[in-house]
Image (tube, rainbow, N blue to C red; front, side, top):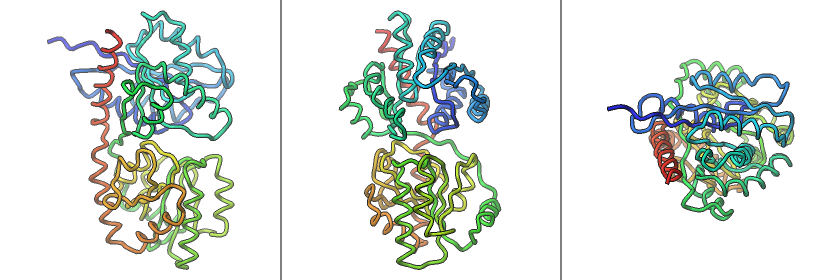
Length: 388
């Protein structure tokens, strides 16, 4: 029996770095290429690049490693109209079955480019909604534009039920919304001595207890709450064996450093790290103090690493882990509750081990194969609906 022709999928995604959405795309592409006979996918990645800017090697190398072709749209400045024409021409030439976009900027670009095509030439448009940030005025402008453009997508995929409810309130039909949590491929094992080497390099002894957090340093991630909670624990206990390690970078780094300054070397700002696995290996507890989250990859990484987790009860987090069984959940912005949960685990090694083991089992639900199967079914459904 002749195999069906693969679906042609064009994926528009930001190319500044290897983000969570890109990792999900690359993991799914590996699943797609290993043999789902019912629906095969031929995927092309499309990104934008500022004219005369240096090549984004990390992004391009990651896509190349997944053996995916890349198209780059050239832009002169923010809110440049030129990529609209470039994308509409690319859609006309490549004629994909599906075009999917992964950010508010690229939602707008896809919406405008499709308007230049006749209705019979427009590919099915699936928009992936990963949540909102409010870092800059430019991002806030794109957020507002997103409220308009997502109403015109053929289907919208978001990462948790609270986000789906927000979309419904903003005019996206419930019938055109799917919730699909992120997934995490099995990460390479960290060598036995790597954690010890990193601890020594950071001035952390083998007996110190490390609270780790990983994420972009922006206000909605709640790092200020975590620093304050950690300071409260230090003030109350006077323990000398506690460390807080913050991995990530962003616009809040200066204010966070100032907030942590009285704690001295008890708080370590590690910056952005390309190889995150070893950082989970040095940790005793993972903290995720966010005010807003969707389906965070950092949470899945901590679960896969077998770390006990203290996280806020926001977005998709309560859908991914169970309070008291595979993590401890606290209200967002509640520094006292955050400090109490962290202190409880810092003083209870058996409970840390129990929560870590439960997190590993829970993480197995979020595999690229499971997400890939759901995504392929969604492609099939959207393509069928558009052809009717």
